[in-house]
Length: 140
Image (cartoon, rainbow, N blue to C red; front, side):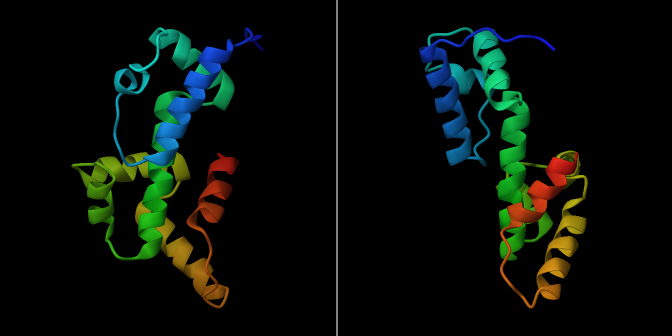
């Protein structure tokens, strides 16, 4: 296991700001250069420290947050899978399904069935989509 170097306060704050930006706008597809451009640090420094602090690469973190938002959209039931894919910034539903399955180990339609089956079995209690999704991610 590799020891990580202490992070400077400014780098730490930059990483937290990048994380906050992703968290607040998970469906906005920003590239790494766009995310890091406001900060006076090199890409490698920010990417390495982001992973050290969050345990995930920027790309993986963005993808997980985008897919969590997709779960929320699917839970609402106002959009079908294709519309959800488009809302999440995908031109192709197959690419969306591939990324979704990469995160949750289920296709979007399998996730929907699982979610609605679980909800119906519990007398239509409202479950946050992330309760189910987080369990799946943690098992991965």
